[in-house]
Length: 236
Image: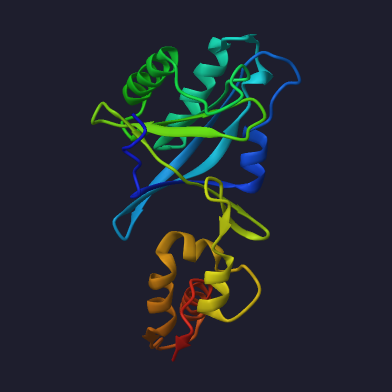
C-alpha cells in the first residue's frame, strides 16, 4: 500500500505554518488542521506550497478519541476562501493519538478525502488535489498522501519546511542549506527558495547565465533587481 511513493511531488510549508498546523490539545482526543495552497511545476516536479493555515478551533469542533468533526461554518469558510483565493490544494493534517508507532489512514480518512475533493472541485474548478497527513501520538512518525483527478491516493515521502536555518526535509531530517552555500558561495539564505524550486543544478545554470539589460531607468532597474534576487549574477 505504501510502495507507490511519488518522487515527483513535494509539499512545502513555512516553519511557522508547519508549527501552527501541528499543534495538538493536551488530551487523548484527536486533532485536525486544514491548509490552503498553490501548485506549480518545475523541471518535471509538482510542488504544492501552503499559503494559508486555517484554524478549525475558532469554531465549534466535535472531538473524540476516534474522530474530529469540524463545524459546518468552518467548512463553509474554508471553501469560500478556497474559491476566492483560487487555491489549488487543500491540506488536511490529522493526529491519531491512539497510535504510538507507524500511523495509517482509516476508511474514514479515505471517505473524508474523497468527499473534500468532490466538494472542492464543485466549488472551485482550480482544485487540483486534496493532501492528507496523519501523525501518530507524539508526532514522531507520519504518513502523507494526495488525491487528484485520477481518483487514486498517491503516497509521498518528504515534507519541506522553510525556516531561518534553511529547508528541512521532515522525513529525512536533512537540509539543503549546504547546496545554497555551494552554489552561491555565501552563508545567508536569500536563495533558499530558489534551490527548493529549481534544484541545485537549475540554480547553477541561472548563476552562470549572462543577461544584457539595455537602459537602467525605472523599468530596467526594477528588472535588474528582480533578476539579481533570482540568482542571476552576470548582468550587463
